[in-house]
Length: 409
Image (cartoon, rainbow, N blue to C red; front, side):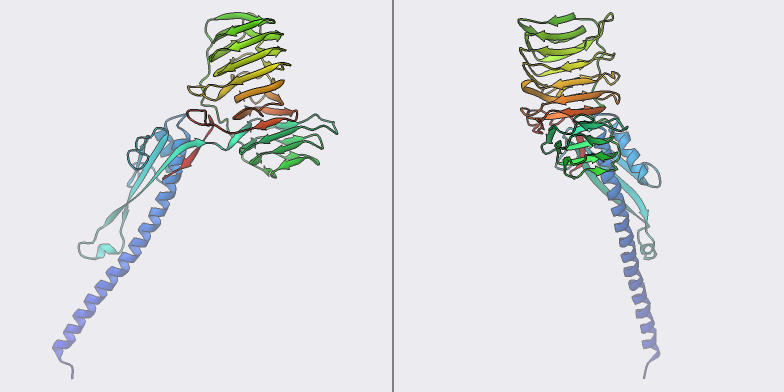
């Protein structure tokens, strides 16, 4: 027989059980919601860190990271969101490291079921963190012209021949078409991306290009341009003997022809037009032309770069400073086309930078003796059968001048 007191106790226990069950269910549902929110925030913070690191050489890192976070639904100061950007990071294993970006996103989230429990929290703060930095880019050849023919190999209408280019452990990014004219032409790289179409006939392209790629932007656009100012040298032309040249502003061009042999001391050589004389940089001698730690800057105007020496040309870029890794730099406003022809035992170690989309760079037998070679040009015309692009950047204090943002934490 059940007593009235026992019935009352049962009701109490049932009520307590229902409260505990509701609390457990509410806690599980709220924790599930918080985990979902955490995943969303982590995705956004990863993206924001990469966006911030990608802008280290260009603009305001904080603004870039916060803009990216906002694009993923987390706007600083809105709906309980806080976005914190630290460059360099303020915590973690990469604390204080230059070139690294730390992003933290937190948001105050409401609870739904746990709040019904006495003293249950009505809100909870969810936070995620990520760190990214600029690492060496995988690309070493970039063509920026979006119209057909951004990369061509060989000569139109030619049936034979043997034009060869190998990019060792680096990628080719082509904003236009890729055209190989000769049946024996060969092109290989670690990866090949083409925004346009591939016209190769029976030619050998390895690996198969990825077509339909989104056009790439200029990866060296952060480099400072030069306002040449007053002239240090005027109409400099050398056609014989042995000469040692020093850095400075060369107005009216710098020409090395005949049997001249020239040594360039380390530094920045700015070539700029003057008084209608617009010769640019010309190296076309049977002698020896050498220079370590040099950058040649071809200023705005219509002067061109022409290196077609029948002698020996050995030039290497600086290993540090603003132009670390940059050998030939044509001002973005200069539309002139350029030629770099190897000659005997050539060495052109550094980036060949001709970014104007109307500028075509022609290369012929370069790169095989270089630790690294980089090309960024409006379009690229490849000739010869000894174009070997290596990618050993160990001599550069900051690695390759072309960077990609990499997530590390």
